[in-house]
Length: 249
Ligand SMILES: Nc1ncnc2c1ncn2[C@@H]1O[C@H](COP(=O)(O)OP(=O)(O)OP(=O)(O)O)[C@@H](O)[C@H]1O
Ligand SMILES: [Mg+2]
Image 1 (tube, rainbow, N blue to C red):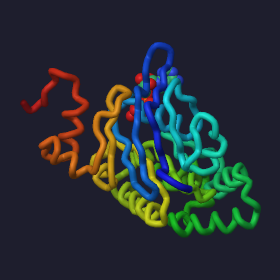
Image 2: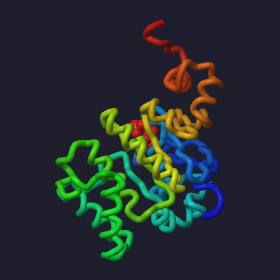
Image 3: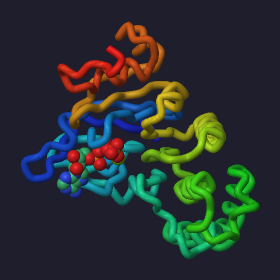
Image 4: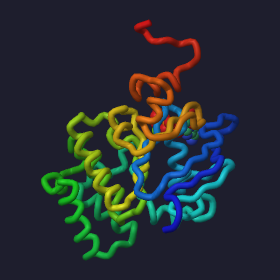
């Protein structure tokens, strides 16, 4: 794969007259951990769905893994892993059954699939939970299993839409350790989060507000640029409606 993992230029998506994603342009290099931030309703999930070849843009262009998001969505789907914001596992199936199911959708043969499941169980420390019914696992384990499902076919780019929402801090920390490990092996990690401690772990972040990109850069550089005390302070100042001040003021 040549060039950047993600390249988008003036990507726009309208729903009727409402513009959910408004002229979004950015690029993400291979092996980067890129944090895709923004308030609720900013347009993050809509943008990710376009990048994953699941939703067509109204206008604009882009490539993911070198494939055109308008014309090569099937190639993109085979290149990427996607962990959607909503729980995407079959709750009545065990972890192993979920992994097998998704592995088959990528046409992995029986022995490759078996080896890959063992490998992921080891890598993600899932062995103890893999044969339990997914829907009954604690959220942290379910999310870890969903990550395993998202990477069953060894994608080079993963899109993770709020993978740690509602997950406790210990699980979140270990989850991020896994993302680092993935990035170290060259996988590009494109991740959304509302947790500012997680945003700090990213090489670069972008911040969306009402469909538009309002900032992009390394977390520490952005804090300095905006003379903010920390990332949360900067984030709130960027997305706060005009005229609203801190409760403490
Ligand atoms: N299929 C749709 N039809 C109409 N409006 C939609 C549709 N999908 C999303 N929207 C609207 O687009 C806007 C952006 O939604 P989106 O889910 O992309 O935001 P988000 O940044 O992912 O938010 P959150 O942080 O809450 O997940 C919202 O106002 C949402 O209601
Ligand atoms: Mg979302």
